[in-house]
Length: 92
Image 1 (spheres, one colour):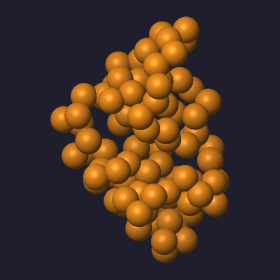
Image 2: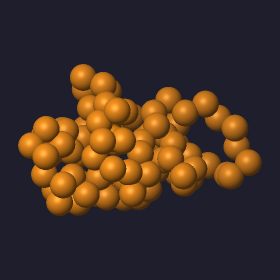
Image 3: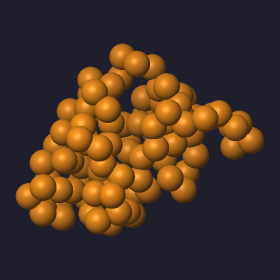
């Protein structure tokens, strides 16, 4: 799956990594619902770090369609809330 981190670029992630990412996504959703800004910041950073660590960066000139778009590390709680589906940021 091709994942874009807004403001950074795209990475290719194997489907096997989504169990770990979905756990972080669930934690992020809980913190957002609780209004836990500090927890939200920490977990968003951990989620984006995991995508960077597990994914293979695509060249800057690659024009692959992104199947998943994640917020930038400095996105506000409200900005991320607007990006959410019922499953969180990551479907499944």
